[in-house]
Image (cartoon, rainbow over all chains, first blue to last red; front, side, top):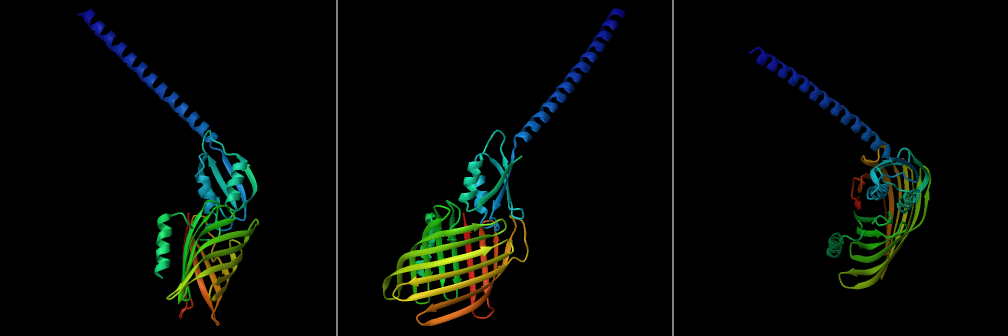
Length: 121
Length: 204
């Protein structure tokens, strides 16, 4: 009887330790996953390149629609913001995509404007 | 009137034509203007940044003209805070009245200059057929407020125009409000007496 009690006690202790270990493993995995997600997000953020274009002659929002429309239809562009006050167009480029300066110039010129400067950040 | 309406419907149906003189390459414009003297519908497509082709219908009190139209941006000056343009308009088509049809043509031009705050425009349009109509228009405008690209923009404009036709010469001055947001523009003008103006324009 005493032996049986001792065995049950050992079994319970073992199960408890095992459970704790399992919980620790889950927690560890969660932390690793969180770290991975943060790292991935940071990498994605890095790859969302920003391009700022200074556009000459862009004084009217009705006429500047062509700039927004043409950039939005380009596969590399995630987002377009037109700032009339600063005469700037801000492009957010999709991760792992690229648009070269010649293409940017082509779109702006075919929309009827001239480029002052292109900055990549 | 019926012919112009039919043309307008056709333009919308075929969806390939377009009406601001010239816009971005591949862009379409459809516009309509109604005043006491005329009603116009224009639809153009800009095939390059400097040339657009389309249809142009204009109705006078006793006749109307339907034309194939070509608009050319002769020169654009893009400055840091301003833009100015010089356009040439040419058209050829049929002028009809209640009894006869004639070959009709259109020759015109526009020069404009604008900043975000100020706007000026000068237009000449000559409609040539069995008789001639000459329309001269000058505009000066000011934006009462400056706002972000995506908001509603407004212009307060004074328009002086003169119509010369069959030895009749009529001049008028109209205050006009122009509003636009994204790709839609409307204008309403009145002298609070017997003259009015309404314009609608969309581009895509």
